[in-house]
Image (cartoon, rainbow, N blue to C red; front, top):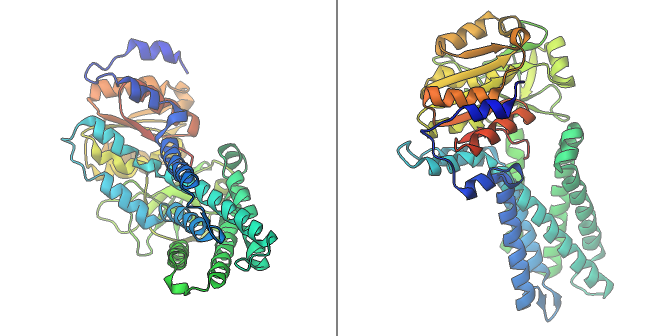
Length: 444
């Protein structure tokens, strides 16, 4: 890659004002919207904790206010789980993209970060686990003082739940999740189901000990919502036939037509073993056609086995869910930057032609790797696409190309679909220069 600083400094985008100091500060990866949302939830809980300690609301004449602690735990964990529900995600994207392109760019830029909602999930899960730990500590204190309000069973279940939540939080830390992704996924799936069962047991034991009606407690109804939310995607689990086109040993195109249709900016999860692992890929609908396609390229053990041993059927669950590129409609003109199979999430937007798009696609031997049909489809939809063959020309300076494209195409935003390092680099370089930029965040 050429000297990035030199290339970028030679280019300018006079039409785009330099962002203010606050936005430049928030463009730093450690201060992303994801982390700011997580911090917001955590700070709100800690302020409530401080207020409660000051006002004495966590203590009654009988001892610790166990009901208060229980309700706070349930509220945070319910929020954390529901914010990741597929229907809720689609609603968040729908609401964020209702704003017309006549609104100020700064507002649309902020709304385009809707996909950082995972920060709310992380903050809620963290604080929910902390409130569970507080409840457990209070319950064990009561138990040690022979309080009739707490049974040995409640203390044991609470301690087991805290231990399980700690394991889930630790494995969700970014370094561990990236290095041991399969472990993270299985811990969260099976550990999550076990935690839900323990949460039910804890709540019912606590309600019984309080001598109140189960149906009158907020925890019962919150747990019903949590359970339904978790079960809903699995209620739509089905094994479906697929048609696979294999243009090379590096990538395949998988076609689905089982009754569900996709939309530009969406993704679907598939599996060959639904209890062990799921992989999400961008859905590629074609105008006027039923069903959708996925492009799967060799990027690990699972994708490699899929390409080498193409299945006749795969499992799908849940519904088609909105993703990062769904926010393109907030802008008048957009530059898409993609590498390799990142063209999959971009292709449906090229085909839909909802707004003017310029494409920069860097990939190895595009026709040899992805087939003539895909490349020709791209060129018909976007004749001026900048397709960079890395086998012939080496790796391009995508940040510099993106900046140049924004100037020549008069684009308002850049959407990058690539690997983690390159996506973060392109997004940071664009936003540092006052250009709204978006890409996957690999957080939650």
